[in-house]
Length: 416
Ligand code: MEV
Picture 1 (cartoon, rainbow, N blue to C red):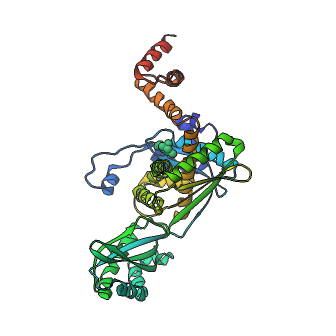
Picture 2 (cartoon, rainbow, N blue to C red):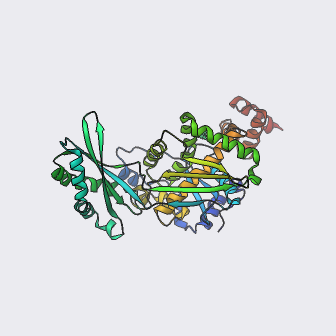
């Protein structure tokens, strides 16, 4: 089915649900999950000291065509305009053939910190010489992962200079398949530590994965045709990009816009969005803080966008497998594994960046924000049904989005 659904935002809540149910072949049970709350007993097993739940709306981004496949994308976010912006950008990218994505193997890095070494380089050599033993010990911890084709694949070691002397940092390169991988990697890092101490004579302190997952990368590209967006937008976006490329103050905000989209999908699927955030910004800083996207103009004058970032995300394990709404979100997304999921996230990030810098370079973002804000103010003033839009539209037209004005307008419309 086509994810290009025009006027999705104009449908009622029930009609929108119906469309998604049809698109994703959802069941009656799925619909009940959409309508229900997370059971408290599940919540109490997720974290400690629970007292209540915090609701965030989940919206569906439409129009995404990625590697020739249509997607509806659930996004959980409290900020207005993000879902609309993603859908709009995806509609335009479709005209250029949609998004194309690639991902690397799902390789995570586990770090083991070895200190108090007399001979850090000699120790490094010993670690590398004993690579096969380290890999064996690591893999003994997770036979299931190994049976699925994953497991520890390689060992790297670096000497770093610190104010407490040189330290040896051993990296376990672990294929985590479709998990986010933190548990598997941390277990392996802890398991190899005594053997590393034995062969190096040093002392191990930290044993933990790195969120700078440079071996678990996702890439997406898309063309945004000039004939759809106009030459001014192409030029404006190129100028916006150059600004982000040269100025870390701007790059931080530019990348925040990218993460608006990626985080929203991660939250909808109960993935560790903090891990992805940390990885994205650390990756952006590898050569001085930079934009995660690149923008160019091709021979035809069309705008080409590209994004690359580490994306450590799972489709099995953790809350993404226990939270009923996270499972529902994954059903809607219909991704077969963590790599396809990472590709979708990269495409969403690129779409979000396109939408943000296009709006910023042209009309600004406030107009889009204002119409939703105005609706909220109209509701606060007591408007119901059709009057919500009527009051909101009038306030936006007047440029006066205020509670007192909403009350006046509501009175006027009610009396007329
Ligand atoms: C707001 O949440 C995101 C933007 O600031 C992103 C950007 O400036 O590119 C609009």
